[in-house]
Image 1: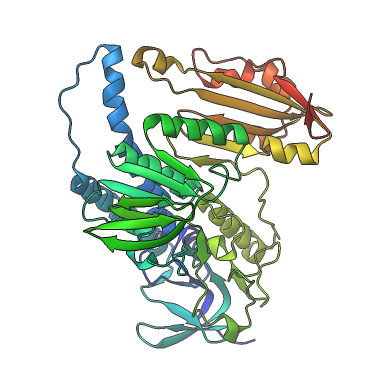
Image 2: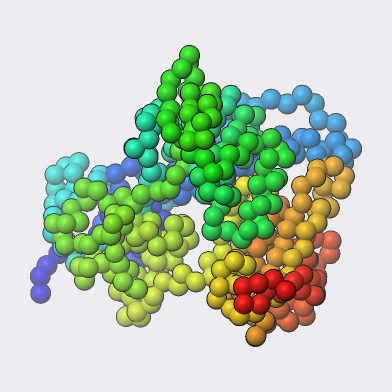
Length: 461
């Protein structure tokens, strides 16, 4: 039997990489892990965690306005961007420390360096030039924003990475993209007082979400004052009189302080030595894996965004735990990518799990659709016009709830609980038998007794 320096070596210190390294080490395996930037990965360092902190910050302008309807007199308010950045950086540093502490406590060996494969069992640590060997290797290097290099003037633009470190808050911003990153940042910047425009090539924002929620959020964002340009794209960006001049395909000329590109993400697979090790990638540069996250090389696995399966932090963590079960607990376990609850931290939020109405109509011959749109209680005194939407998609044949979609405050929190419900295979009858918690917005989920409409063979009836 060959002798290796490590039982497991992990390349990438994000959520999937850290989880697989920490748990394997806690099982008594000799584990090494290398990260070239900061431990915590996209989510903790430059993704969902700092973004959610920014979301909270951006909501206070509306909270101050709403307070008047409840009898409060709020004095003059002001916002300090640099204080937010300082507080955010302090929290991210704390979280990174916890990631490192978890690895250290489990006795994993931590390397602060880029790592590349020399062959199927050998890793080069670039900072020192050291080479180490491992019986099993996990690649969890994640992804990065697509810089859209074909766009003239792309070097003048920022991505979500830079948005967390701007030296000052711009007075105006143009955000390109219609996915959740673009939509969330449009709401963040607008809430912080930035004149915000969103430009998207499609007919409607958030292409993979239920149409009712997409339209409802679009209307709410425009009502707040966010300008949304659909069926359009940026054609070039130039400097002009201290600002940026942007020309679009529809011949619009926009002058803004900052342009942010949120046009998808690219797997981090360049210069990892994948070819030398025999690891296959697809046309988009993502590592190809089987149903157990194993690559084309039997002892090398890949987890998370680098595989471009589902780009969500909890999915990477789940894939890591399945890897542990498969390799170290003699319990082959496939990651389950069905019925993943997800949220868009827009304002208002979207929370969703399961099939959209459009996708369900293609899969099932008959559907019952339960839909409620209403003004939440908080808005009755604040005077805010924002509406909530709740929607359940039910397979008429067996009454199973196959999709649940919410637009409104705390939609993400509700989606987490609905994820358990749909995963358990609950039927509409189970919802109907459940007592409502009153007064809450969520009670609508269990008080919609009659279908709003039915869909038969793709047609509403």
